[in-house]
Image (tube, rainbow, N blue to C red; front, top):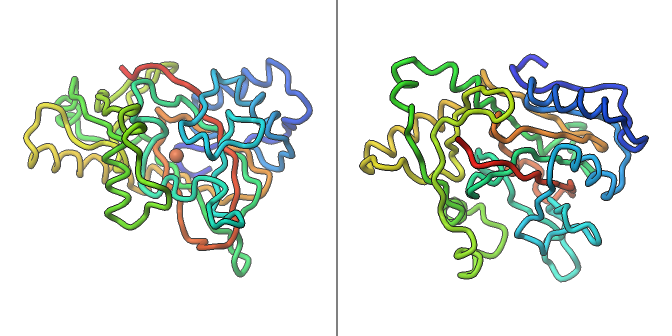
Length: 282
Ligand SMILES: [Fe+2]
């Protein structure tokens, strides 16, 4: 791949029970390249979970209404509607740059996404996922700014995220209930976090979920946040994935941010997602 992230792994059939040394190879490659792509996989929901469990503990989404039947650790990402008009899965995930679960005290470490139904129009694949390297983005900052960010913390807020989406007219699910809001209080994380495995410094503020910088007045904090979240979105740090049915992708949520491209309207799209628990960012 031309970007500083993303690598395609060939010759591995997940349905044929890879060995522990295969998984060690995958974990090492993931920590080096941040996004792994395995093409042409034909797996069941249970096989996806078994694959994901080799990278850590699976975390069931609090949106359990979108769980795959009998496999609650997997959630459905889809714009397909049931007969009653309700979506069968999350229909508006990832419209703003983000990293999964950053609004939790211990965000998701990895995400495993499997392409089942991929929208195509006039031979063009739609619904790409764009990844941006948070360590390449950090590394490209001027050293004076790096010093300024040292020890700085920021607030990540799921409630603010939903409000942001609603304001942009992007929300395709019910607003949070009071109970969900209480279950997801705002959290603070370092603006720059160290990767728990390889020690790389990663920029950890996102357009989608970071609401403010701690201890900074509104104007100054908003300006800095805007600068950093725009910086991490630059194409220099990108790998853009064009999906094919059977693609199994795993990415490292500390090392990359991502964005879902919504260009497919009502053309059916379905993916299954597994989240893997991570540690408290430091
Ligand atoms: Fe996401």
